[in-house]
Length: 316
Image 1 (spheres, helix red, strand yellow):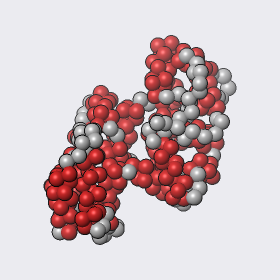
Image 2 (cartoon, helix red, strand yellow):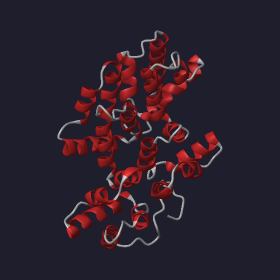
Image 3 (tube, one colour):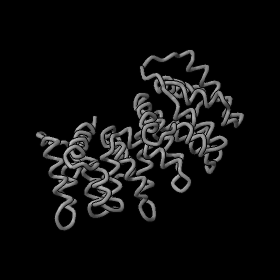
């Protein structure tokens, strides 16, 4: 499933915690040691390291890392060390803030996590921020964006493979009608996209394609600059082929004048243990350059080493 390089024999969480403590002591921080441990441990192992670190040294490992590290390297290490649900809750909260607001991040979390995964994010959000994710999304968005995003982050979709073909046909027809009328914010269109299982949606969208001769995203491109339509197309991409969506985020993050480190860090830390191999394949296919080469060309130092270790490359 994951491309993460976890060594055959992993030291005990206690040994790892002790080594990390050593990395923070003495003159300067031993960044290489931090990468060699944290970048090569899975979520369960990282959780144990954090627990034992707190028990042994009376300090949260995240606080210690925060004190010792800085800039993009600090962000990638901190995000990676967090439990996946905590990490998503943190990113979602950041995405509702005025200065860092980002509807794409909310959409990504809502549409590419499993139903249980998204439920755990909402729980983590409650315990960390003493509010619900839904109320923050509703408060910080408006108009059509709110209409789409609140039900997306509140969703608990059925995860099975069962598909109702009659329903797929009738809902493809509804989608086509609303899009033809340019009623992109119609409650029926939003209902279908925010409540149906991914398998059911795939069947509906395949039928849409066959019946009406165009993919739904092509029909949603009537105004390429409309921000809401961009979000609608991204919703469909995230729900049906997440690796294509993430490839595009990475491509835009890396090929910008000046790298979008936040986008790059977010995709690498949230997908390294999920579908990074598929994203890497898609990236190579689309850009004719392996992702690790693109990252190495565009980043440097410990930040580069950590990213390469997380996507399963580099001997860092």
